[in-house]
Length: 124
Image (cartoon, rainbow, N blue to C red; front, side, top):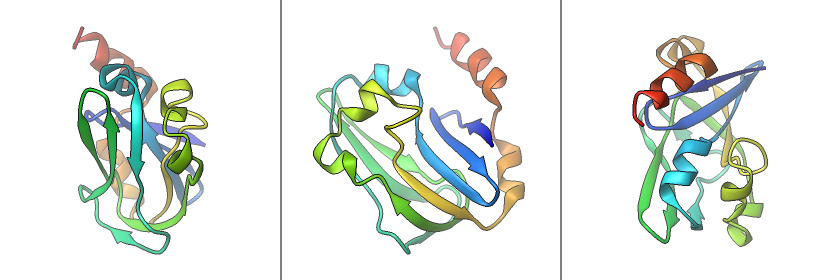
């Protein structure tokens, strides 16, 4: 199990060939109170960089882009009725979807946890 981050404040936690995707604590704080999450459908296929989901807060709407290419295998249905779960547990229970990764090499462009901490420290 390895977690990777993007400069767009998304994360993917990889176990074998499955990636669980969400937004970081930093992102949820910047967005404020999350009121709605639009999720993809199981079976949808995406390429790295494709828009996969949308997060709406009282401040703004933000697109979620796929960090890797693959097929959606599961979505977090709890977010449909409890979008605020992203605020209370962004990097655990507030995950958005799981994707079967088709190209592991795409993970090479992402940051590890230490790299991401340094990245956000430079933003503050």
